[in-house]
Length: 237
Image (cartoon, rainbow, N blue to C red; front, side, top):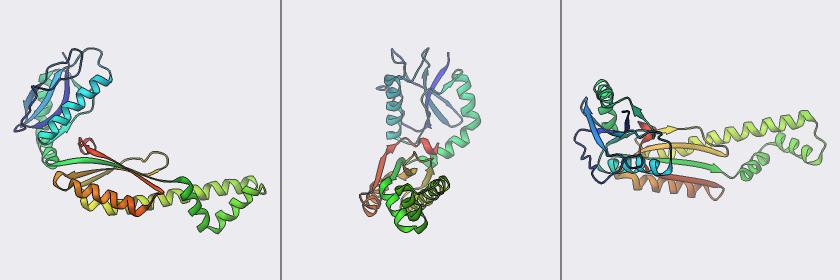
């Protein structure tokens, strides 16, 4: 039977699994597979497993409980191994790498920050600071712009938006990086200039949250900062 894998932990982790339930309906009991100086928290994989709300929440509850008790490498939902023996073989082969990563994550949590600027506010700034863009924008507004003018306007504005987004992301990271052990950037969604995850020591988490708030206040009402965490350190596994 396939083995469902929730996480990998250190061998001295408390591994309090008695009150936790695994995925599946009925819920599958949790157990551990140990090899290579680490332990994997696993269960039997139910047939036809899909990302139903109940199972996703069960998976997350296991991770949250494990992380609350010590360093944990969280696995994504739905990760399967052929059986416990195969899982043990991988743990034995990769044990040193897992132990190193667990040591790095010990006492840390992940925070994700998404930052955006009001589009209208940004465009007004771009138009006010560029004579060429202002000229082309006026032609377009009055209907006297040709096709080449409209294309040129679009390209100039897009270039300025990208340039300013890059600058805002760089400045924000410079403010926040000193409070984090590591930073992992992801592609921002449309309208955002930053999507970054921060690996933060637990003892300085309050200081990091304060730094984010101060940066958001400094930017002003035209900016939206969305901070989520503490989270399992998926971005650093």
